[in-house]
Length: 116
Image (cartoon, rainbow, N blue to C red; front, side, top):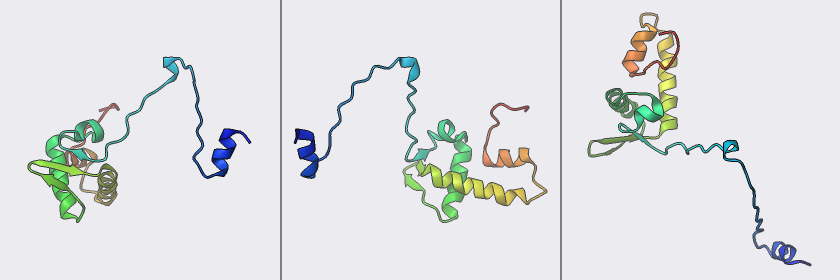
């Protein structure tokens, strides 16, 4: 029995060594999503301006969700925050008195591309 099989039979982890040569144009590096978003990173990750993020974070906390406050810094978990925004958007779809532009302004969203 060779060394690898003996290690596997004894419950030791398998090791695989691989050497590859790739052209750099074939590789795309993608940053991991952030664990938390603050007023300093909200525009880059969420497309929401700082003042709008702070107002939405206040509402998010008032709705019973977690907002970490450290001095003036406000941190939210982005997946839950975005899900909450989507729910708010669905609730506002039924309000015929609010236009898309008014809703976008209220949420602090900015249009990227499109006809506007």
